[in-house]
Image (cartoon, rainbow, N blue to C red):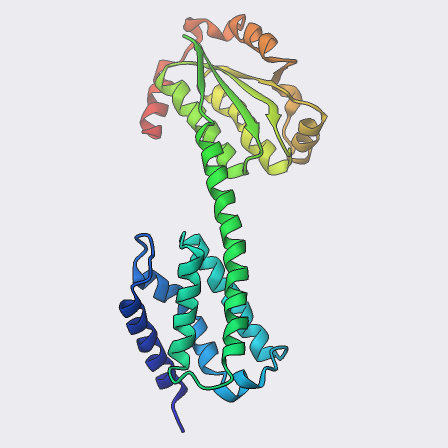
Amino acid sequence: MADPKSDTTSVTERFRGALEAAKPATGGVPLADLLAEVMPLLPLLTELPAEKRAAGNFGSFEFRECFTVLTLVGRRLALLDLTPTTAIQVTRLALQSVDPRNEAGVERFAQHAVAAAVEGFVLGREERVSQLALKRAASCLKPLRIDGSIFALIISGAHEPAVLSDTVDALGRAMLEADVELAIVDLTQLDEPNRERAIAVFAADEIAKMLGGQCVFTGVDARWRAAATDARIPLDAMQTAANLAEALAAARNSADRDAKERTPSWRAHLRRLLR
């Protein structure tokens, strides 16, 4: 009786050799990365004898499991930024590695297998496009220098809490490096308030206070107040304004702008920590 582990090893070697011989257009992605993504699929294909694949009982558990993994492999190939043609070629090479003799009756299974991989590829492509769009949008979230003593952070769109936290941290670093103590954070155009986003954006108040200054928030509507309440954030203790003009006036009239109230030793220590 053949050793399943040995069979899987030989299939892996055949697939590796097929990749090296075919040299699919990967756009710079190493063939080793393709092998790593397809490796979990090969044992499942090996456990499906040719007669089962030819029988076409694709609704059984074995086939559903195999098609699910094929969908996941297709998704991973899309996330590697391969083309659909290359993804199909890689899937076909994997199938041929399991059935090098191209036994009669298995082409119908191969068609179903490629369809499952393409379905996953489409999902992965949508995910990648979304990731790139979010990354481009996040790259625009930068602190804006208003004058010699004020930075503003104007956030628009829908961003993940981690992105918002990074943006607020960038605001703190910019204030520290420029020796600025006042900030304005505008939430008017920031979508989808929730607990996690509230924690991220309202952290700007704590950062400003650590620097011996203050932060004025605008665009704090009922949705953001509800999110702040859910996060147990004491919003009433923070300074808010109806719009950017009022926030700018409040910041410019702030008593905290008095240079005598600064704490150089604390700020110097904070600079060393944030380097």
